[in-house]
Amino acid sequence: MYAIEAENLKKSYPKKIPLPFRKVEWVNAVNGISFKVKKGELFGLLGPNGAGKTTTIKILTTLLEPSGGDAKILGYDIRRDVREIRRRINLVAEGERTLYWRLSAYENLKYFARIYYVPKSVEKERIEELLKLVGLWERRNDLVMGFSRGMKQRLAIAKALINDPEVLFLDEPTLGLDVQSAIFVREFVRKLVDEHKKTVLLTTHYMAEAEELCDRIAIIDHGKIIALDTPEGLKRLVKDEDAVEIKVKDFNPEKLRDAPFALAIVKEDPTSNLTTLRGQIDEEDLPKVVEWLVKNNAKILSVEEKEPTLEDVFIKLTGRAIRD
Amino acid sequence: MEATKELRALYGVIVKNWRIFLSYKVWFISDIAFGLFFAGQALLIGIGLTGERNSKALQNLTGYSDYVAFAILGFMVLGFSLTFLSGFVWSIIEELYAGTLEYSFAAPMRRITFFLGNVLLRIILTLLYLGIYVILFVLLFGLSLNWVNFLKALPVLFLGSIGMVGVGLTAAGIVLYLRDPGPFVNVLEMLVFALSGAMYPIKILPKGLQYLAKALPYAPTTDAVRKVVAFGYTAAKGEISYVLFISAVYALIGYLVYRWSERQAKIVGLKSY
Image 1: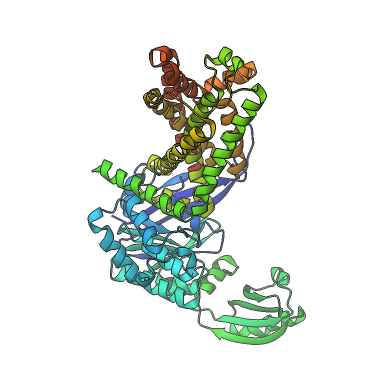
Image 2: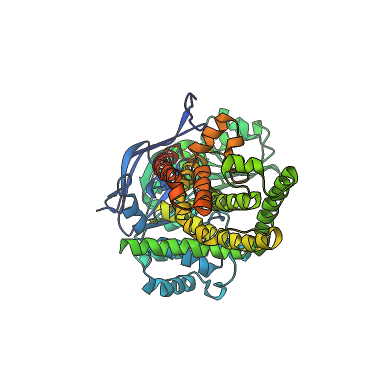
């Protein structure tokens, strides 16, 4: 039995709230995705903002009903067995306003322990263990409103473990965190899989995070899975092609639409007018690329050959880069 | 076992709300002052217009003449009744604005437990406020009621509460659907107040509004409670039967509307869904 099974999952949203006699247009957010996650696996959904990652998580955590397709969590049907699933899973939602800011860290966990049916006999012990695990035991009586973003996220993760879930859903768990907190969260999530044998499905639009953490990754774009493999397997798609990163100044990115080769913007700094472009360019084609950029008023600052990454896979598959 | 788990979840919701309430201590004073001033002003307007505490017009319309007793009883029933409506709708709105609704809704706890947890604390607070009001009204306005009959009327109030829970669930279902539910709730609360017969007999309303008032559980409950307090159970048989009927109807409507709304919210992707 798989921990998560999604079969041709679809979800569309109305552009306006449907009311009687109001004709509304529906937009596809998830467009027939299928994947399976093994027990004890760390599975990543990687894609740009608006790709359908959060919608997929909401469907799998029973918060949304799919417009089509089927999904099972630990063998339970997401439409039929909602409460059975909810007892066995938990989630960390995107954003920092997901906990009660006017309660202490301890009170927050106590509340969630009760609504997740954690037995009274283990409640105290579980809360203490979790707060120690995320390094917040010393701050347990402090109100959440005084916590940093990183601390709030650590508490959100502790909350997500309160019912000792078999499957954990993490929606952009490191979004907006400082470097130290992001490292803590990544290491912690990996530990949850390796040592505590949890199954984790996480969404991210950070390439490095997906590459570093996940056992397998599904690249999702416009509500569809466009590739699914291990990080190494995905990178093999661009193994034989050189990745080139070119830093340019005063370049109008609009011109890329007419470019005769696949270059994508990976970074833009409007204040200094600097743009970083990346793509798979053969050695013999590189002079032509540089010539084309110069012809389009770009001042070349640097040209570097890089190890292929998931970014290159995404560029190869979509012609675009995943950007923050 | 299942019931024990649900009760613990209910207790969890109540404790959580109590802790949050304690972090807004000034609201306690503001809530009491607001209710007191509101009822006090309505009483003074009534007395000012009729020129005396006992009104012949009121006697003709309702059968009892003491406006102070009439209005305070109505105010207390209304205060209690509105707790259900506001408890249901504001529990969604407040959690939504705080950003915490999604986590609560993603838990295995039943939805009714979430709502009742929110409503129960409000009821406890309302009863506390009402206790304070009674003392103040006795001291300030010389309120005199048959307190034994008042206690006897409580089962009627609880019977009416079933219908009010139904209205609360219906309103909560609508709130799930609205982009900005605050104005809707304000209008609804004012409408319920206007049609509750709390401060004036509904017989003075235009015919259409009288029917509307009778179609909601608030005015019939207020009337039944008043009649039991003034004349006892036997005289109020008709009113109590109607409260029983309308409560059953609203309980069913509330259940169906909320179930439908939540299903729609999951399909359409509303609020935290």
